[in-house]
Amino acid sequence: MNKKVLVPVLAAAMAAAIMPVSSVMAEDELIKVGFAQVGHESDWRTASTKSCQDVFSEENGYDLSFVDCDNDEAAQKEAVRSFIEQDVDYIIIDPIIATGWDTVLTECDEAGIPVIVIDRTIDDSDKYAAWVGSNFKTEGLAAGEWLKAYADAQGIEEINALVISGTTGASAQIGRSDGFNEVAEKYGWNVIDEQTGDFTEAGGQEVMENYCKSYEGQFNVVVCQNDNEAFGAMTAMDNAGVTYGPGNDVILISFDACTAGLEDVKAGKITADFECNPLAAPFVEEVIQTLAAGEEPESEVYMVEHWYALADQIVDFEIDGEAQEMTEVTDEVIEAQY
Ligand code: GZL
Image 1 (cartoon, rainbow, N blue to C red):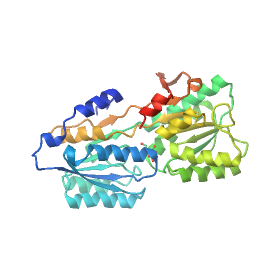
Image 2: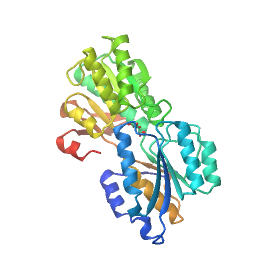
Image 3: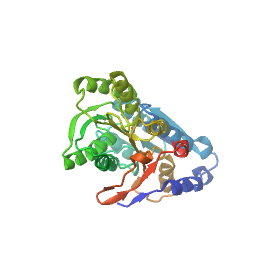
Image 4: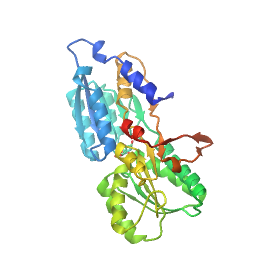
């Protein structure tokens, strides 16, 4: 199975160069695309939805049926079945959780409608044409290996970590947890607890409130599996008198690196932020163009991610022997973020 990794600049150039399918399809015919989106739980999701709506627009030759499934697995399956009834040309799915998909994907297959999976993965069926997204385990490994290098540089010998994980069973949660926990085990860290914040700000605050009560004075690292959980966790720590960020009680690690997350890095609140790139829609369109031309698309397309921190928190680290580059958060970097 060939994998293709796209560099953001190249990706942007390719996206701009890709002719809307409408320019090669019959003038009066729009391509019908159904998109079953996870929900609206985070800044990341908002950017992902906008990317898809911008790409699959009528002016680009598409008739997009968009369903916000509000983090409800049953509603997401129902949305896919409604696309089959509408006899759309293509179905895009961002799967809320990684399992329970083979039955409905078989129905898509029997209806002759190609499915493209975006962002999160489907782990119990291969009845789809391609997947475009991120390597979530790599994100978790990066956070863990950065923490090891940073703690060593700071002379911090003991790591007592609390984890606020994403939606249980989402491949993003599974990958980030697997990656971070693999590093924690390698270095003998104490991961005190891991509870789900469901990728929401309210969830992050609720879990962190409970953590501050249950583990007062016992932790020096908090890992939030997305920025919105980190925003909630910061509110809870403020209310509990726990300080966080460089030079404070707690090293705060986050994922996504949305604009607001990078602003909190710049403000010295989030110590390091591990990006997950939401702008996959142009590459999903490339898959659709390839299928429309009767050709076979790349089966997996990985988005390229960056690891962010302020200059003083940038340290050298490796993942499986491969040196990692960190990006310093500046006003210009924030301005350019999604
Ligand atoms: C990751 C994506 C996750 C983000 C969260 O690719 O599925 O879901 O990390 C979002 O912000 O809720």
